[in-house]
Length: 84
Image (cartoon, rainbow, N blue to C red; front, side, top):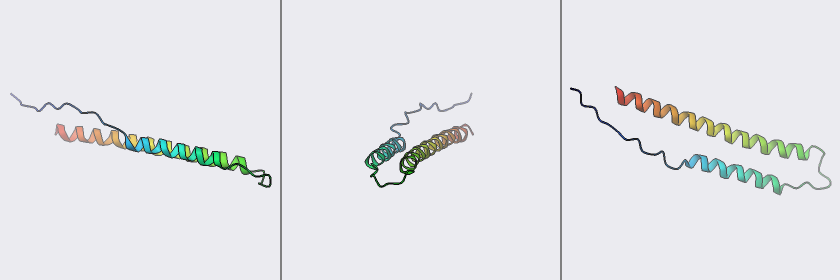
């Protein structure tokens, strides 16, 4: 008869990295809102400002997706190590 330990998975808790990315996104939007053009600004000011904000937000999203993938791989590796 085999004796195996039964474990109860606990919750992952608060995802502080995700909360940090949300604050960073809010910061980008606030900085973008503050960057009001002046009458003598070049024609490409708005496209550059909007493009910079969008690129930053996409970058935060991609980094968060990589974070989630890494957590998933670590959990899978941990499960595999426990079964050995």
